[in-house]
Length: 297
Image (tube, rainbow, N blue to C red; front, side, top):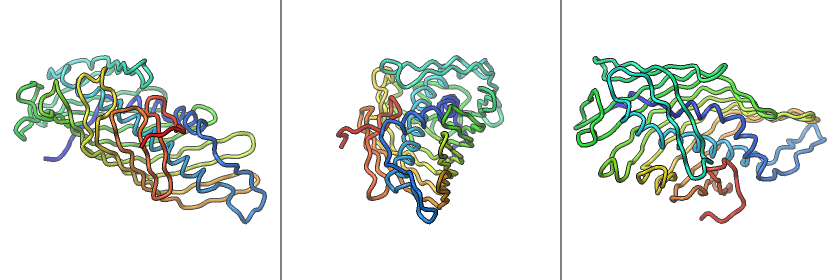
C-alpha cells in the first residue's frame, strides 16, 4: 500500500523556516569564525554542526505541526466536496504555532483522493492531499470505527526571507497516521520526506550559505490524544541525512562539501536530544525552535 498523500501542515513549515533558522542559531553561541588566512576555513566543525542541528530541529518542529493538526482536520473535513476548514493549532501557551488554511479542496472518486492547492503567501505554493484507508482499501470518507489510517502527501516550494536569513525551499512529505489502538487514544506516524533548500545567513561582513538536499524518515512517532494536552510525541524518532555544500564569504571565502546524519529522539517533552554523527550532541527545544544548553538525555 503506497502513500499517496500529505496536507494541511506544510504551509506553516516554510512560512517559519527563515525566521526560525535565525532565532535558533542565535541562541547557541557559535565559535568565532573571523578568519584572516585565505588558505584556511574560518568556519569550525562545531559551528557547522550547530547550523545543521538548527536546520534539523526546525524541520522537525514544522513536521510536528503537520502531525498535530492534519489527522483531526482531515477527519472533520471528509465530505467529498468542501471548503478546507481553517486549521488552528493551539499548543501549550501557543508556542508551537497557529496556522489557518482558507483554500478549496476537491475529491476524486476514481482515486479516493482529497486534494487542495493554494498560494500561502508571496512566492510560496502548497499542493497537498489525503486518503483514508480501512482494511487496506481506500475509502471516500473518515469513520472512526472503520478507518485504520490516513495517508498524507504534499509539496511546498518557494522563497522566504527574514533578515539576516533567506531560504529557498522545495520539500515533499509522505506520511501515514494510524490509530493505536483507537483514534481517541493514541496515533502513530511513519513516513518519509525530501527537501532541497538553500539557506543563507548574511550581515555586513560575511555570509554563510548552505545548499542542501535532505532525506528524512519518521519511525513510530506516537502521540497521545488530545493533542492540546499532549503536544509532544511520547516516543519514536526522526532521522535526517544532509548532503550538499557550504560556502562562507567574507575576509576569507571557502566552499566545501558537507555530509551529515542527524537523529532526533522523542521523549514526551518539548526538549529532546538531537545527535549529529558521533560527536555532535545537542538538546533542541521544539516549542521555541532553539538549541538549548540543558540536560535532555
